Image (tube, rainbow, N blue to C red; front, side):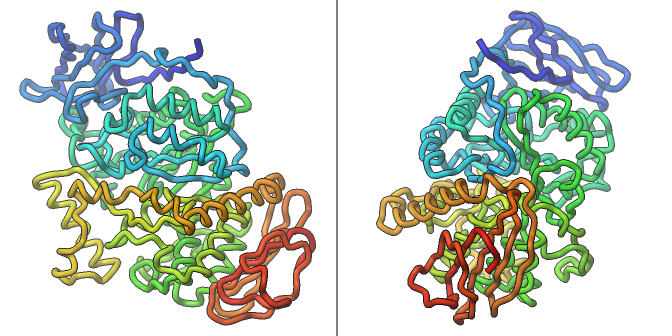
Length: 585
């Protein structure tokens, strides 16, 4: 039998089949009791650092809570499972219960990464996602990335309102089913990444202030909640241990760290990386990805695998849709030059003044390999934070979008697709959460304020027509319509995706290690030609025209893909792309 266990410093740890040690950090308390079902309350011993410890004669399956004051009981912040939700009792799990079928899986090198971002609730549950893995592997996807699975309040949520970061939400099934899903993915050669949220807790079900006020520091408050004090060693280790827990006990192949810019202690990132390096088995590939809207490229030089390039998305969105509100507005100035820069240097803003923030943004990135930048045309944020949840494909000229899609999948950056994008889904994707009462109303008002700030949308009559984030229907209608997949258009998109990914696997991926930019030139309005020297010395060159005018193009040699095979020689018509491998154009 092959099993994996991460021994956590906090929480409930089995020390024998019928005996469990409980550890809770509760520095705000003088007394704490652990209350296990069918057992009398057990007083916990207080240590000098505010940690409480006790043992009880119970094993896997037992449910428990902590009594931190006479009238206040709380779930375990390091709970491995909350079968009745975030307000219920925690359940003791035996990590050795699951027998792994792929214990020797080592992951894949970063250069092979092709990410498919998805939401497990919209896939149905863990079993529903498992049934989809074969078709994704056959398509050419190498990595499936789950939006957060940590326990949140209610039955549906994007996952970024989590409050118990060690406990997979019961909304998708039991923890053993999640392990089985990951195990099956590995058997198909797929890596699995997890989106983790360490910069804030959700608005409902976070009990930490009842017993651990030192977890927070108001100096570090975020737009989403109380600021977490990463300068406190116990707090810092709580999240480092959580990362190791997902990587070691659940065998995730990588973590995407949400809003990394809101984690206030930079040294925490280095400690995390060091702990992971020491813990993982020799030869195993484990990847750390950052979401960092500050465009801070520094950690990419220090071992982090990749970082989302919102600059890529914003530049392409402006070119394809003409979007001109909020954060998109600065990308209207010299947009073609920005496309040239993101293709050659990964980021558009590298320390220049950024008007929406009235300060500089970013740091130099031109020395970094192109694979360090995760690029996308669509993702959960960029679709779901639009008032109507429109996908970019519905806002773009069809030919121009196809050219941009080919650029995404053939250029040396690390590409990411979003749920349904492979078949050209046009189903809206909305923000949804299962909050009620005052919290639900606060969420609704917060969305309206966001739309007013970033979309200039303030008309109450229009706002009243938007799907409410707390309406169950909003969750249901965000699920991509698989009937689209079976239409002639959907099948054509699937064929296009499969062809492009096959070309990437055969011609580009094997030579990505050591690749670097060989420069780019502007061919015309919204038209650019860019080249990269690959690791074997060959030259990948891509010319793309997202504009409305035909531009001149020296006829390339060794073309391996073009979106318009009937184009006239030495021209690049609107909405077309040409890719060649060999010598420069």
